[in-house]
Image (tube, rainbow, N blue to C red; front, side):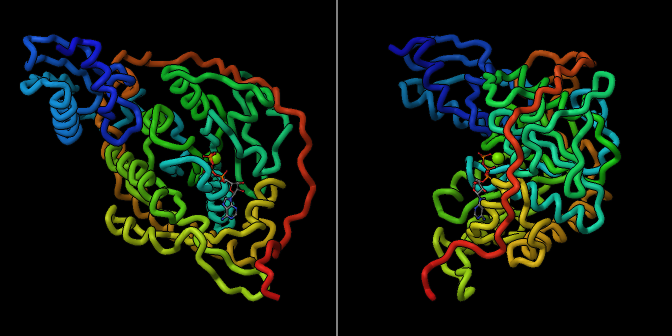
Length: 407
Ligand SMILES: Nc1ncnc2c1ncn2[C@@H]1O[C@H](COP(=O)(O)OP(=O)(O)OP(=O)(O)O)[C@@H](O)[C@H]1O
Ligand SMILES: [Mg+2]
């Protein structure tokens, strides 16, 4: 007969809706009681008041436990009342109120071009007259300093707050600039939450129209914390067009839905390859596959970016293509994508209230754990000024490189 440990192990297959982490790993299982070999009682605490989330968990728990012989499972789900206040669920207000709009750049998996997209879209939006910032919230692998040519640059600290860098028309801050080069940290739920909140609260962000936030891959604590700390105006999903990548993408799109974050669009990255010699566009990973996905989620593909060696070289050299080769095909596509995003942001900015774009979590409760969050986290940033030492590359960005040997 299965015991409580077997039940818990089985429940590890049940993810919290919209996330890649299970209800066990989120520590939402509060009690397991076995009544007899076919019946048990499970008590679950969830941080969302959404009926949809509750029902999904209920269905998935029943079917998981069915597999190990429990035909009659009683599930007691404890959830908070839907918040009535129209403000942020953690602090009662947007913790970075000088920023008008927050755009979360996410993907279902790593390496699809989130950081590249963030950098180029942000610069393109700044070039279109918006006051823009980039927050590198990828605490596991911050790449923005390299991509923006900021590697090794020291952070200026004023009082106990850090000043964002100003480069290529945008304000930038990254966890990578606040940690020693190569330093590896093991981030746990509460630390992730604190780090993300400090990146918003303890950085001297000026008044901004849009803060682009480059997320770690996937759907986890960082995404959840961010959505709880500030009202996210919209999410951008970056994906490559292979069908296997689209499967992962759905997770990220589902997460936006679960968090009530409007979708600003999909960037289909590494979508075909334009031959630098004959300008023929050929398919490598597939192309145009994201259109159906976009339709399914009620959004649109705002940019098809081909595989372009100059994009990669611009990223490695800290010389983003939009800024350094604005006449290139890719830069123009980023500009168009930014134009579409800006009009979406402007539209949402007027219409959306904070409450409707916050997760339905009770005030003062983190969705990462069911423990209450302190009303006012400590002010001191451990934001040192300990940037790394490697020099910024001065390699120019080629306008036209790579090749298919057609000439
Ligand atoms: N359209 C493109 N053409 C050529 N290279 C690209 C393109 N988009 C991104 N790259 C390159 O692919 C690599 C991965 O891109 P990037 O770091 O932006 O992905 P990411 O999704 O942010 O990854 P991670 O999940 O690790 O944060 C980088 O070297 C980048 O320069
Ligand atoms: Mg990245």
